[in-house]
Amino acid sequence: MRLENKVAIVTGGAQGLGKAFAEELLKKGAKVCICDLQAAEGRKVVKDWQQRFGRHSSMFVPCDVTDHDSFQNVFRTTKSRLGPIDIVVNNAGIGNEGDGWQRTIHINLIGVIEGTRLAVMYMSKEEGGKGGVVVNVASTAGLTPVFNTPVYAGSKYGVVGYTRSMAANPSIHEVGIRFTCLCPAYTDTTMFKSEKIDDLKKVDSNDPLVQMVMKAGVNTIEDVANGFMQLVETDNNNGGVMTVTKYKGIQYRHGKPLTNKL
Image (cartoon, rainbow, N blue to C red; front, side, top):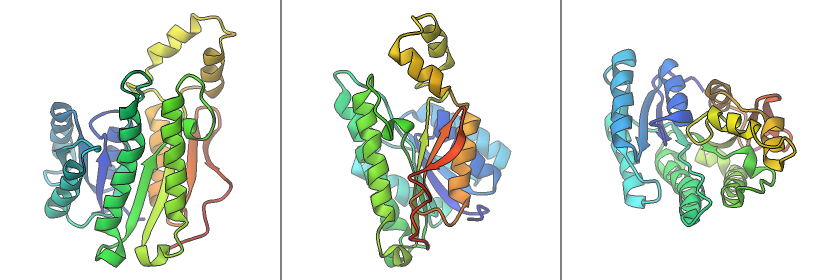
């Protein structure tokens, strides 16, 4: 996909990976709407982008991805102000394993499903759209058991299965949308900062959690953004599930992407 003048929506775009994904799209000439619950930070980020990439390059819409009306307003507003939507990045996520574990499922899985269904509504050729690509952000925790975050892992397993199932639709040609899944390992974001690695190093090296993190390594945001751009720009990767790990780099899991091509 050539990105110049394409229109993208990125959830959870005020910071971390979402912000990095949006900025990479902007660098290639796309127009981007980020949505997030962090309104002050989101507006600050967009103000900077408008100075760097142009006044009409980007916009911010506050959004709770667990609220259908709030989420649909993002799509409606983006189409009205930036034009027909070509790219949807369902990136918003949290990692609460405690008393608020239900919200982890609501944001990480139900929010992704909601965003994907809205993407189909606004982008499908059958609905009058131009087609495009959906990137659902999961995690390597959606591909292998993670004993210390079972709710988070469960939500991400769901994202992987849902995305591949959407991509397997025999009517993909009529829909005109590719569905892909990005699975980063531990990444240096606010959810998993480098300071936590330093803390882990102080723990007994035989601790299973320490061993797991040290074995995987910690991605930089740039590592993951490079993988993301490959998913967006490569047109024949419908159903692709990409992992990004510190030591093995960018790889596709489950063999080659599904053969249902547009």
